[in-house]
Length: 374
Image (cartoon, helix red, strand yellow):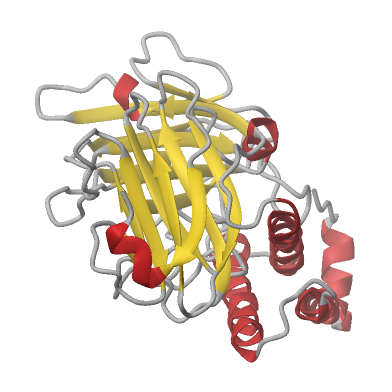
């Protein structure tokens, strides 16, 4: 974590050093566009440039604009035009700044969203190269009133009489809320309000918070970009067009959810090829599969079907699942478009799987043969 005393922060502000350091961090982050393992096509590089600008925007929102833990704001840092780490197209993400030594109250109404997950985290991708969890509360465990309302106390210690408690530790800095809609057309998001209980309320920005926030934002850009570039390089090198199980401990350390089993990997297809993915389904709350670009940004799910899930997909007569990734429509169920990408990343998630999910069987075949496959 960055620790600057007020005197140092003010000196850096007056001298211009704070802004210079921020710009230097952004310049260093640009080295991700020059990696030796980066595919040498203009499309990937253009998306990479846009990706860095999105990370700048996300960092400034999280660490400068909404960084006061005395007045926490539930903000969408990751969304349709700011993405990272194989963000889930089914998810509506919300983040807020927390002070791990304080107490917060989250009031809400459950709505009909399929799955709700609350978590607290420490660190950031830039400062600690991860987001280690400090507490989880699954929405299925929420105690609700007759109208679907609830209150969650967020604190290091559980207060007496609290029906719902989300743990923190003294070094907690972030609240993340995931709401998974398997069918957005029919599911309503939870209504949520967050406030600090006791302790200092809103405070005007000061040199210490401004300089620290700016540096944290700059570090996020370089940290997130390099971390996920390293992931993708490993996927392409070790298991291209396969979906092996991802390391759970690493997933948790990076801010993943302990009861989600992940299969992260990379794909690459020629114009006339298709990736066919077959798997039996194990009992679980829900599953989903998505396509992302080289930078582990989900493809644009606003306009095309680039992902599917346990509610939207059509199963085969024997109850198994077949997904088809291809540049053009092969005329079969569960086709996911590449949106003009020749390569990218992908992710299969199982939420609350009752048993270890198998590795899906993957094969690359001519797209013209997909419809006739048994």
